Image (tube, rainbow, N blue to C red):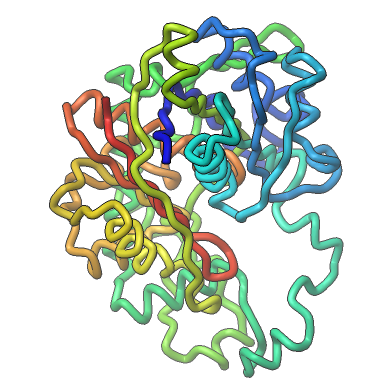
Length: 395
């Protein structure tokens, strides 16, 4: 089996969605995703006609993000019409799955050069709008999970908090740390190594993440009310303490990401050097009620595939969809918290669903490069009780 190498990773800034939209709202989703695609070509100087495929992750595939949004982004980026594209949905792990599919294609010899990308414009294509008021699960799934069927992720976060004994204070403290780490990384220029600026139709250039709250405090976080409490869930899950707030959950955001993956022969042909090698990837299913806990078993599965242990990993990225699954993961794995989300996470930086896998991977690689670490591990919890795991080796 051939090796798959990461030659480059880019992401746009993440733009926080407010009541009146975000700074990226004027941009079509295809044009925002195209920013990341063009940047990979411009930064590495290769002919885009060489791209065997572009695999893009997107969760809410309706409206502006429908009709294979990745193909639209390829055309928007000015790539030759011969470059194919497809769009995948692994929920929050969509662009992470795109990386895995791209790497597997290179390893199998099907691709020489592939781009894995991601997009989510949550201001123009709101989360859950693709449901169109319909039940996506059906009566048989509801019968399997008697008592009310499956639940939204906020309730799952509450269940994880209850089952792992996580307090509101611990989740708020973790969230404050996320903002503090992100603010420090932004000040140090760490994100500038990952971010490609976005030019809006009016000429405004956006080059920094705007969701970091450097001035937040435990007192401010403690003043926020739980957002998912409802009478039905209270009756069904009496163990819940109702501690998940907007402050200890990820921010709704717009953003895009792109990862350039190649085989060894293509890199040599183009005179490019790899930044990392993809060591192992895996995906797993777990309890879809406490759907955010799958990051724990996928960690064990991915490490076993790589022949590594937790002690071998120098940096971790565990998606902060909520503080609860990260803290549960820390409890179960015993990982050194100082190595986890060292530059903050989605609580501070935002979570543009389909693009977040690429954003985490960019952060993971830059962390390894700055600290001199060798192995990095990334995982994301996903709706339906799914999770992806990925291990890279810095080169």
